[in-house]
Figure: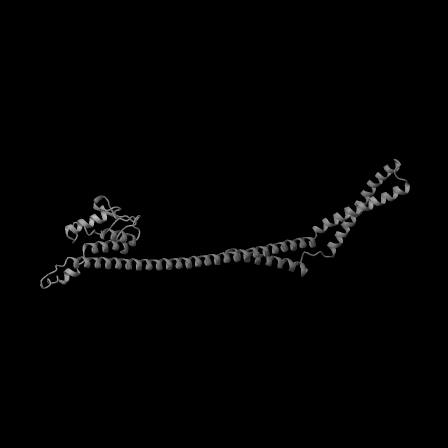
Length: 308
C-alpha cells in the first residue's frame, strides 16, 4: 500500500505542475489566447464560409423548388417561401458546424481541451486515491480480524489446557486414593491371615514370641502385585499407548519374590480369565487396556481374584 501511495503522489505532483503551466499560459495571457488579428482572420473566414454555404444551398434549394412548382405542387408564393426556408435552415446548420470546428482548432479551443483533459486526470487521481485508502482500510481491518481470531484461539486453547490439567489432577488423585484403598485392604487382609495362623498355647503356656518387626511389616506378594499393577497406570512411561509393559514384572527371573509367589502372581494375572496381561514375543507383556482401561477396573478384577 505504501508503494502504491508513493506512485500516486508522484503522479499527482507531475499533473499539478503541468496543470499550473497550462493555467498560467491561459490566465496570464502569455499564450493560448488569440490576439486581435487572429480574431479578425477567423471572422473573415467565417463570413467567407457563410457566403459560400448560403450560395450553394440557395442554388440547390432553388432547383428543387422550381421542380416542385413546375410539377404543380407549389404555387409562386409557396415556392418562394419554401426556397427561403430551406436556404436559411441549411445555411445556418452548415455555418454552425463549421464555426464549431473552427473553434476547436483555435488557441482557446485547444486550451479548453487541455484543461478538460487535466481535469479528467485529476478526477482519475482522486478516484485512485480513494481506492487506495479503501484498500488500506480493508487491509487493516483484515489484520485486526486475524489478530482477534488468533487471540480467541489462544484463549480457547488456554482454557482447554487448563481443563485437561484439572481433569488429569483429579484422575491422578482418584487413582492414588484407589491405590491406597486397595493397599490398605490387602494389608488388612494379610494381617487377618497372619493372626489366624498364630499358634495358640493352652494350659497357661506363654504366647509364642512375636516375629521380628521386619517380618510383620514386610509386604506380601499380593500387595506387591497390586502396587505394581497400579504403578503401570500411575507412573509415566510404564506402558506404551498400545499397552506394552516397559518395566520388569515382579514374577520375572530377576524378581525378588520367592518362586512360589512368582507362580501365584503369574496364575492370577495370566491364566485366570479374562487375563490382565497377554504375553508377546520375546517374553514381553501387554496390559489389556481395552478391558482394563482404568486402575479401578484393574484393581477390582485383581481384588476379586486375590480374595478367592
